[in-house]
Image (tube, rainbow, N blue to C red; front, top):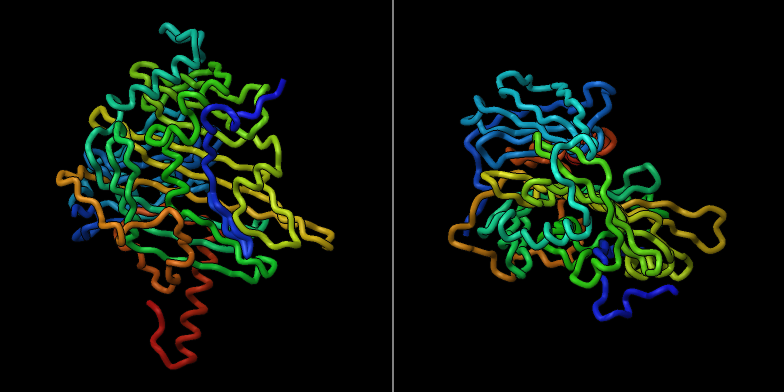
Length: 437
């Protein structure tokens, strides 16, 4: 017998982008105080043996809250305050031995940082392996009060969302935001305040369709599974999954259990499948990588597409998420997340359909305790219905981000930005204005 899980006592929540094809897709203390000066270091993080890039590796400045993430090509751009230029950089990546090196050993450009894989079989570990994978997950979620930051915190985050038609970039929006994060034991939703944003959109590549992502940074923030467990594992919905152990690994020399989960076959509604990476000693969720199990494309379409043209059918083909947590002084906190939605648009009276992807990612680049528990006023907060591309300005200023750490753009995006900047300069020169810097 097949069960429809949404008809049970408590509905399973789905973390949604909201897309519209017009489309809208719905998928006091200020950390952003200016630094006196900073130095930039760029390069890439690679596997020592295969030389393949390591995507979403974390680079952090020791004894500080400054950090950044490698992009989808393994490249990074790290901005270090001048006062800390004699410090040490720590590089970590899931399943690899951590790497530390003095900043003095880095060049300004073209650094190649190699990491060595570290994989441990469960059978080789001299530690008692829990017999119940589901029990371990339940225990981990219950221990958030003692393992994750318990003070109100103000975080600086870099956020990016991208829309592609097949492999061509159509739209790029970026922002620096303040996250007023409540303790992990609190049921209150985190507040967000937009500090700075910019965009680049070429609607000529969208088949006369204006494709937009609704929710902005909230699409990435709600992937914080520990803070927002009701989006995936409620007290009831956790019963809809099968859990099992797969090979363990190590992160920062700590043993990590890898728990695989997937929905039970008797449930037909789209739910999740993926892997949870749990610290074996203290039962801490350090990372999660998972995706929506699309069992019914029409039902999935109703979840994610808010508006669409009458002469088109739209359905998602992939919905995937990732969240990584970081540790400082024995406490863990949300550090990075991304979400991806790929979908098809099947037009009436057209031989070929259109394939699009929308992705968003957010990385914490700095944070400090919110000692006064200051939060922005309601009118200053980002609303969960925000469409960032409608709020942002253009790419005219190459020094737009200043000292704030960002995720290094992919080459294709970077090239598109430079092209737009050249066009803006030519337009201003032709009109007798002053060219952009």
